[in-house]
Length: 213
Image 1 (cartoon, rainbow, N blue to C red):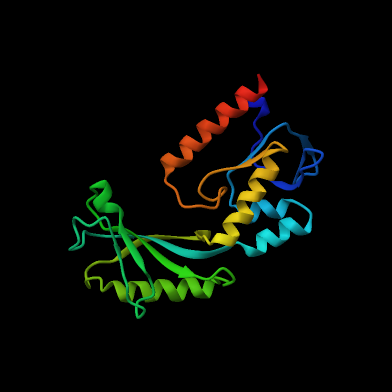
Image 2: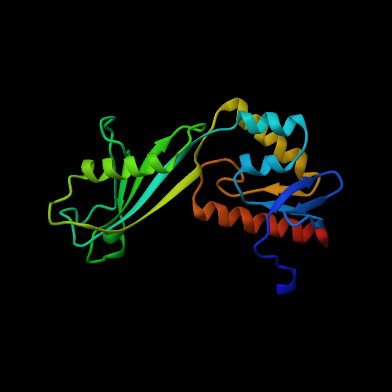
């Protein structure tokens, strides 16, 4: 039923006791089940209470600045899909080749540059990192950058430790009793594949459907 799908709106607050989600336009929605797939650190910000704030502050992760670069010709790397660069003198730690994955006729790459959880990535940082990236790639003189785009992943890679894992699991179990579930790589705050996320979604859908019957 498309009339029940809301677009271009954002949840800003969740009352987990009254089962009410408030949207950015001030409207409120009563829910029976609430399923979250957004990053857990952002999701926790919708709740009021010290325990939610404490868990949110405990969550550790990094940010990643990603450049997507398109050049005018192929490079000498024609088979590689990605590489890790274990060199602190180089500003990026991983590069990948879209053109080799997609069998395209021009070099197209992604570049990953790591930042800390608290780091601010400014426009100046982006410009500086792009210049450093092009220098560190050692591109041939006749290979020119034609297009590029920038993405900031926040969070990018979650950091898992024993104590935080216990807190996250306790949150999931406690809120499941209120009809709230958080799944997916970022919603569950874990490392997993797309296939794992699909399986988790199917299992949750089946469990909720069975419970409603």
